[in-house]
Length: 223
Image (tube, rainbow, N blue to C red; front, side):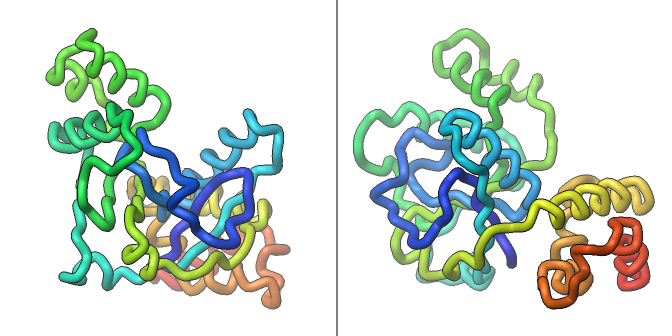
């Protein structure tokens, strides 16, 4: 499975010692299977650093999710257990992990949700109010918390061309409209297609095509 990391730095080698504590799932290297989400994160980071936004692409061995040698935690959606786990990690002020999972997967606490998490931690809103007010927009992140888990992640394949982003955004929106998919389903269908594989291969020159032509080719593949 292709996964993406958005930042202002080209990832040459993953160093967990440079990863910060106090994140949703603790210290670790974070990726997402939603390419547009990674782009948004890269732009957000670069806004403060004044550097160029960069998205690095990796290949994740999904066998790791059923590998008994790795301890995993998966949250299907925003729920009470997700909230408690995020709060546990965000409140951690120590330079050590507060859980022993190798890989944690689930939705992300974006800026608005993070603010509500902080309000909940401070006792300004109740757990019930937080969960009731939570808008369930598709989001996704995987946190690789240990050196062992990083063995399931390939080395970065390089930057993602902005032209491919623009094509992907239009195609995903069209899939959502024409096939009645949510964003996560449409994104998965597009980025696992043979058409996207060709688009990402610069030698095919597919990135020079109009997005509507790419979409027509994708529809032929889906049918």
